[in-house]
Each structure stands twice: as C-alpha cells, then as structure tokens.
Image 1 (cartoon, helix red, strand yellow):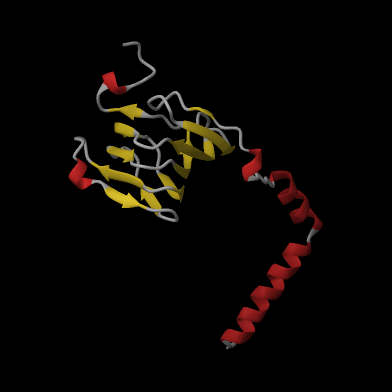
Image 2 (tube, rainbow, N blue to C red; image 1 turned 45 degrees about the horizontal axis):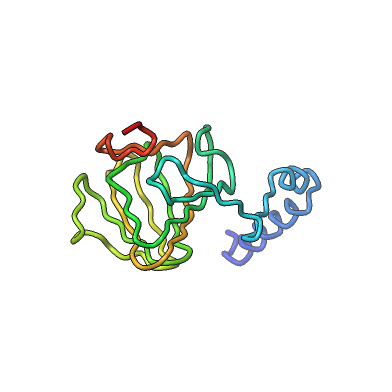
Amino acid sequence: MPTFKATLGFILMAFSIELQSPVWAQDQSLAFARVLAADLKWAPLPVMPKGAQSVVLHGSPGKPGLFTMRVKLPANYKVPVHTHPDERVRTIISGTYYSAVGDTVDASKLMAFPPGTFTHLPPKVWEFSETRDEEVVFEITGVGPTSFDYLNPSDDPRKPK
C-alpha cells in the first residue's frame, strides 16, 4: 500500500507534467485576462439609483456564464429592497458597506461590511443596503444572466416616474 508521501509525490509529478503540456498552456493563455485598476472605465449603473457606477471585469451580467464586476457607490447612498435571480459572492474592496436581508428596510438590521469582507448571497433573497460617510467599492461574481429586481416597482430608476 503506497504511503501518503508517495501518493502526494505522484500527484505533484503528474500536475507538473500537465503544467508543462503545450496544449494546456496554449488553451489557458486564450482565456487569460488581466485588468489593472488604472484600466477601469467606470460608467453609470442604470439599474441602481443615480450615483452608482460599475465596470465589468469578466463576462457579461446579461448573458449566460460567469461574470465579475465592480460597483462603486458614493457616500450616504441607499439601495432599496431588491433581489437577484442568481447566486453571487461579494468582496468589499474599500469603504464600509452596510447591508441586511429582508423585505422591509430596517436600519437596526444593517450589518457593517468593512474592506476585505466576503459575503455569499443565495438567489432570490431580498436585501437592502447603504453607505454612510465614505465611498464604497465592492466586487461581485455571479452567473448570468442576472437582473436587479426591486420589491417596490416605484424604487426602480429604469421606470418612468
């Protein structure tokens, strides 16, 4: 019976051979993406109240497949109760974001999400959020197509008032 060390050595050797394979390297290079912070071109995010900005880093939120985007919210900004059809993860990059789940805005339920905080949100969960005295930037990864659906249709900035 092989020892743990021998098994681990075999796995590492096989992985090393796979990494050296020109086919693997070629296939991976076709999908490689690098985005520097200096390359970001922020644009208004029309699905959220005025002032929100976003930039798509990978994929397309409107199409099937994995997407990653960054969102920037100004200080003292509120996001009404909303949901998304997709599972998503969020990492706070800068500023402190305040968020809670529920279908009624209740400031006492808001939790602080300082920089570095990672969150997972299942699909179709009602949530609301806000920023306070500073701009907040966070990154979202999900599987599209996605949408931004408001509990109260009058909160939707895409609808005529």
